[in-house]
Image (cartoon, rainbow, N blue to C red):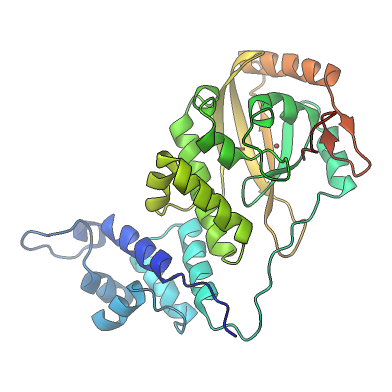
Length: 312
């Protein structure tokens, strides 16, 4: 029995949204007359991709299951997709192909002790491991202190794990904690969009997206934009309740824990010689005195609460 998800709507909306952002002038096509909609017409994308208008129209309606990778690549070039968007389109095409056997569902895996040891050794940087749903599966003491408002929020998932996505969109306090909340929210929605392309069978992810869409108008608007983000790094500005304003550099690095799931190692640090470095050092000292106990599996937790195992 074919258990493929019906992702034709996602394909249609993604391609249409990318087409709408490109003008004929940008791709060297002549313009004439008034246009009813912004961006390129379907026939113009077809010309750029080297396919017939009928064929591209069918593709944009979501019929991508039998399309070769060369054609998907040509469409990606015609629409000027960046690397993350290109990866997402290929993920959508892969998910639409006929399944010859039951799909392999992702299994969540705990962070092994060696990962926790590595995190704990990073005493001057906030370090955490997140899965593709933006849930924290492991963290060091400084990450726990740096993102204390999130860890203490009531928006943890059903397993008690801190969730950047739920905190950002469902806790009003996040709009004070993240100085550039709009940017953080857009990045989080784009990361979830990429994960939805990678893991179309993830019921927990679908439930998360459903909850956020129902409860957060901001998330609904961002989700409708179909923006995609896979690689993320940059500067994060926070209003920390204990040490005050922080401007930190962050970098997300792929961390293979399972061949079926995506995990990132997220590291936050401060530029040497800045006030933020001094405040981060203070927070490090506070974290050392408030470090939680460690359970036998190596995951820090607070006494009397479910184990937490900390973005962007």
